[in-house]
Structure formats: C-alpha cells, structure tokens
Image (cartoon, rainbow, N blue to C red; front, top):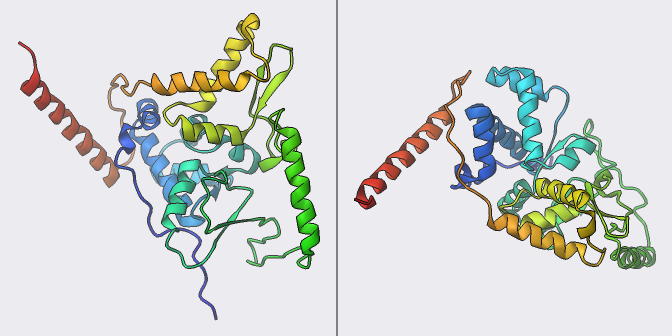
Length: 308
C-alpha cells in the first residue's frame, strides 16, 4: 500500500519581525496577548491541516473558547478583527468559510520548494497571482473531491487537445475584452466573489475592484492596509464629486494614494496597560521577555546618547 501523502507542514517559518508588524501591534493593543496567541494558534492549525488553508466550521469558535478560556463572543471578535486587517482573506471567509492569506500561501510554497513532485493546490482557494506562484505548484479544481472517502472524480478525462486550445483562446479573448473595464474574464465569479468595493467615477459610473486587485496592491504596498485605504478613497470621492476621476485616470489615482499610505505608515502605537490573561501559555513568557529586553535596550541607548 502506498504511503499517504502529507498535505500539511511539520513546521513553518516564523518572521523575526513578527511583533514589529503594525497589524500585530494593533491586534495586541486591542485584545492583549489573547489576540496574538489565538492568531498564532490558528496559523498552526492551517499549516498542519492542508498547509495553506483551513475550513472554519461552526465548532471552531467553541474549540478556541475551550482551549484558551475566552468567551465565544470574544473569540468571534478576534477572528473578525483578523479578517478586517487582512491577516486572513476576508473574501474567501465570507464565500467559503476558508481561513488563508497571501503570506500563509507564500510560506507554504517556500516550505514545499524542495519537494520532488508537483504540489497540487485547490485553485478555488489559491490566491497568489500567476507571477507569485512557482512552477512546482499545480492549481487543480478539487470540486469533485470527497473528504469523506478521499476519492477524486475527474470529469471528462478524455477531452481532446483541440477543445483545450479552443478554450484557451476564448479565455484570452475575454481577458482582452474585459481589461478596459477591470472585469475578470469570468465575469467576477472567481472565488465566487462579487466586487469588494467600487469607486465612483466622474461620468457617474463606478470602477469595480476585486480581490485579485487587492492581492496585487498588497504585494506592492506592503505597509498599507489596502482594504481600509480603499474605503477611505470611496468616502473621499463621494464627498468630492468635482474631483472624481475618469476610468482612464482612476488607476493612477489609486496608485498615488496607496503609495502615500505606504510611505506614511506609523510604526509606533501608544502603549496601553497589559490586559489580564485568562490562561497560561509558555509563548506568553517569550512575548514578555522580548518586550522587557527591548525596553532595557531602549533605556541603555537613552543613557549612552542622551543630550545634556
């Protein structure tokens, strides 16, 4: 009998600047160490289960509540905060109850780089762009896959190369026709998603923005909260009708706005009193040790270089 192929990872890389990330500091500022440790715990579940995504069933909040001694309501608030700050992909969670993110998939891909075979991923839940996806990753439609019996049913396996070529040409044509209007070739049905947001234009029409656009912009302006900035853009355009842009000029407007948001990010947050922890975890000791060492180092620098 063939040995079962492991889907998930045995371990995953942990960024050394994790605690300096402004989204993590915002999470800790709002929910204390509870928020940080629950986020890390969810990452371990994702990397262990499928490696790059996890389905969040109805029992997930109860499991987290039992594990960490937090109320179900607080768990829900923390998960929503993670979605709002794009630490998890909000669109896939709303459409398929799936937890994943661009950074999760990049780490999964890096961990699988040394594999001697192609790594199959479900294209419904794979959000990396074509340029970001490495050659050994094979995006496959797993809609015929049954989790109960582990079997995969391929439909019409004997399609001719002629039909495949015809479909590729049709898809290429649709991409070309929809490029001007910023409409995906599948009519906006990729990942079963509607437009994430729409920006009003000078002619009264709207410029629709999809998840694929947000993923691309996040890779370019990594310090900016793309979803939050898009909401600000819409509010500004609604309030300043005379300054709305044409369809030809709206992308330049977005690029300029996001570039400024990226450059103007403040990395420091006002300190808040430590919130009481309702559970004990070795990882929290590591967090406190890290913060104490950082505080000592800051004091030492102040004594060495302070003015008269």
